[in-house]
Image 1 (tube, rainbow, N blue to C red):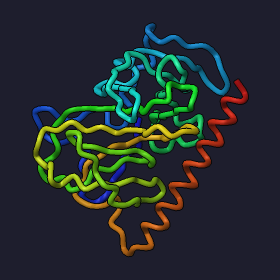
Image 2: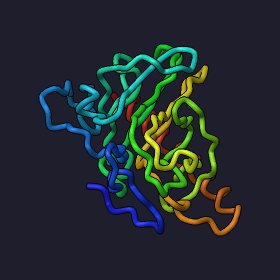
Image 3: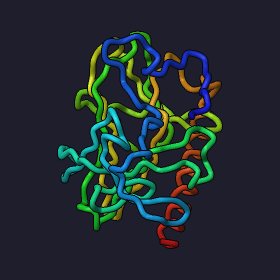
Image 4: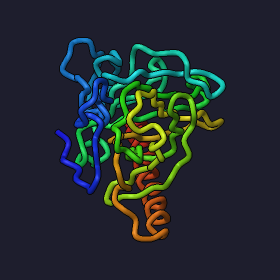
Length: 236
């Protein structure tokens, strides 16, 4: 179970009274106790793939060429992205020694050998009426609302770093949110967790220096995860 994340003004969409709230924003609804998963032993845990409806409920997973993910995929990887599932996987946080903020996270992984395509997850729901920011733990993704890309507002938080976007123009509206990993010529990797809506920055910054420190820490955390992922693949 996720450890509670308590910040002033934080409103997870799942806790807001709404006709169609966003769901599974922390990816903890992944159902790994089902016979539909195709898993095999692998260090340091089981690896394989399974239906996206089980591993990534409430979200649509898409891939596509020309940086435009438009084709839904029915399967997604578990603990290790594989070409057959487009290069994304629900991953146990403990693999990275980072289970303090939840059991699962989402990894996007692309190389030139994996279709040279962009990948995205997409969901339609209601933005809380008093939300000013959309944030997620991680970085390197493009975030869009109803097809319009949002500009990165800043990266804040400790010990977990959150990328923030101004969502206030869409507050109280039903929208489609897409988080996309753009394709890069030599491959791309990103980790995503804890999507949230909030009234304030998580936490509120005291000075511009917080942005610089947050961005640097995010890069270091991303590099450490990439190195662990590389070692994980080499062991297999």
